[in-house]
Image (cartoon, rainbow, N blue to C red):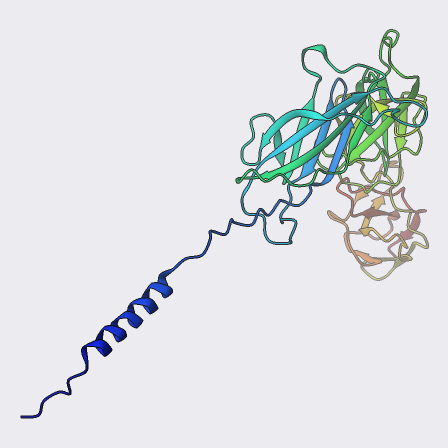
Length: 362
């Protein structure tokens, strides 16, 4: 029988100690390392726009942190406001900001989220906003760990009362044009309203969507406007706002009522020319020059027998050719023919008749 070698007892204890020390060293932990405090990136596209009695603030939520990593734990926004009196060179003393509101990033109850944009209205609380005061704002993003990002760029409004809104807007459509008219506000402007300059007209091709810029270059002094160069058979939507102030950007009123109109093609083609009637043995043939109008649908052929003054239409629908053969004729009867042109518009505008051409079947 073979025996296992017997190790000295001292060697055995030494080996066990080394193993124990090795195991203890592998399981030892160093001092705790705190998680990185990565802040959200600064809010961009921050704007402040005056409303009729409030200031509308808008911004877009950041999508990344300051280090460029994706922002996945956005919790809220902190909106701050400062109040001061503007002077010729701005505010004499830098404004002191204080928190105006905290807006939840998800389903806020004090703001509106529209197409990824946050909208908050500052109405000044119970006291309201005061004319002649500069209201400055900035907003910060906060993540769920409470880390606050850098503030946005400041946006401010030198608040003034808005002029009264025009009323009774009406729109009348023509051929490629829409004529607008409205009523001026009644009564004098309230104290604190800047000088009234006129009206701005806004247009869109969808209801309640008119863009940011008026279609008139400068405020209109008369309560009427012709919008020309439009596309026929397209519906346009309009509102009008009063404009006040010393210089652009103008302090605008609330919008008027919306008015819509659809321009239409009312211009008929030119009358056909060169009509000739040629009799044969049993029919009368007609030929004329092609009409140059680009929206031409076709031609209608008419015939009358004197002493009748009103011609009868021979073609039920417009024909595309510039020839026609009339076989419903009698020998010895004199016939007078005319041709009109019809366009492709929904109204099927018809031209004036061509000059008449006469023919008699032998």
